[in-house]
Image (cartoon, rainbow, N blue to C red; front, top):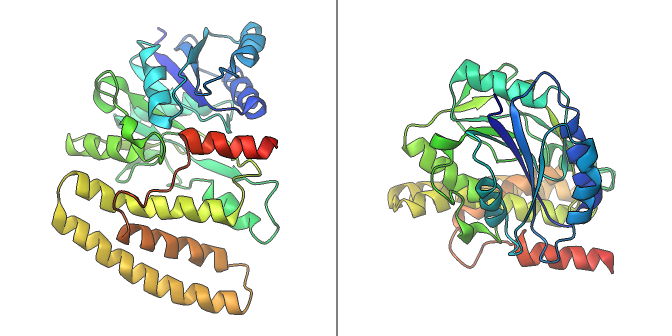
Length: 313
């Protein structure tokens, strides 16, 4: 029975999109479970259409092209969901490549755990990074978890995930379009799922690789993302109007900023290559303090288009 749709949002990454799709075409041990692969082109110009059409003859399952011209990560994910009725939804980002057992491992983990949302490990790749930054950036773009498949307490991001649509992705537009520019759409989604009693799982063998393009493989970009990740707990508590929790996260953030900031200063003085890790922790602490509207970094939508245009020039 075809009961799984794979959604791949994309924005002007033709080479990495092709790599992602070809990795999906090579999936093993899934039989007829896949109903379609949905590619959501988030470029107003529809630049991914020709590439998708060129790959269509190689797809073992229906390959659906969707144009979502309003740039934004939440809008793109919602558009992908609107294009399928599959009860199980897998997400793969356009800068990721899935190992051949990826989808089978996600499905097996979901069946074993009964989780509403299952996540897998990610190996980060930053081939264009400066040598001293490369180990940090590859950890940053990667994702580690338990050695064995099972239930977990803390969810991860949507890239490399499998979700039960009825429970984890309810309604016509479960991703909040207010997150289109800054991201964090999955934080709100999973906070709501947890509040409903949802469960999260880990698929230890569902491996993907994530390739950071040159304009993202920088310390500036990673620290902006770390700051945004730090904002997440405070913003989630604020959205629930749980002000004691907001205060608690801000106190934690202040402590992190002071302690890790001091350590980062020392490692900077001695030019230690490990200083990037402490910069990251400091940025996350500061993010918990400055979670308010107006402080959100923008990584998607119009800002990402502008970055890509700058790279072309």
